[in-house]
Length: 370
Image 1: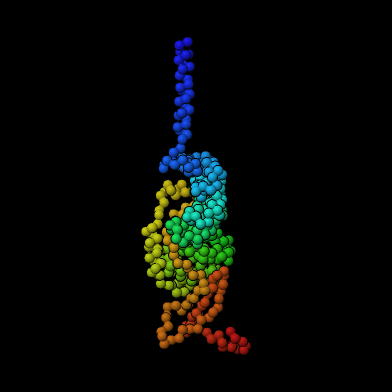
Image 2: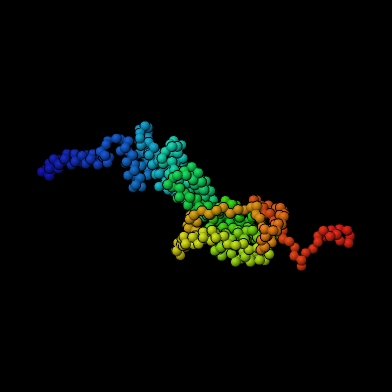
């Protein structure tokens, strides 16, 4: 009986202690000691976000927006909801994050965080990009959103990051097109291969394997007996990609086609040397793991932009070695053009040598011209 009576005496104290304890833990004190309820809700949601409790954080933020529609934390709360989905990740999380960021930009178009929101919109697609031999829809969407960022936020501190992410994205898109172009070469569909490689060179000037695209384009044109056009692109490998392993093959092609070999562009040489120094090499284990990853390897993407390579019209001097002296008038150009997509050629014909010259204007014995 004594024990029972003692327990009955202690029970009210224990219960009251539990309630006091709970009340103390439930009390939220802001850093400044203020008791603004909207601020309390906002800071609580940030703590939940930091601990990965995304659903709880979103409920708190939504309560803030519904209860205090005129709160000074309305803009930050809206952005934090989008951030919660972005940090949560996964396909569904990133899809919802994009919708929330776009909603934020609609409601707060002049926000100082607008550039960050646009960057995150692009990253929702960037983080879902697949390898070049798979679906390219996410890469195309990422390219579109990064370009929108660079067009709209010229002075943003995030601009350099967006530019590099765009180069990464275009590396994947360019490689995808180059693979298709090579496949068309195997099928002997040369016109289709020309179309793909032309797109690579025109739309993705920073592609790290531009020399390969030039090589495939030159071969496709050569297969179509369009020798001057092919020679132009072989020459571009020599002049604009002097450190490429394809340089010797391109020189050999030009010699076989009896076309001039251009000089190396010193600016291109300097860029190529800088690219080699900045090249990030993957470890053996990194390459092995990359085989099993859905994400593309963008380590070979360039770290700076280079000038656009001109596709046409190309001016090719077939009598290239000799430069006319000031006293000599240059030969009149033959404006014959051969166009495929954006490829065109303006040819300056070679003066026939005495050994193989033939007078095509001389009539034959039947009164016809040869």
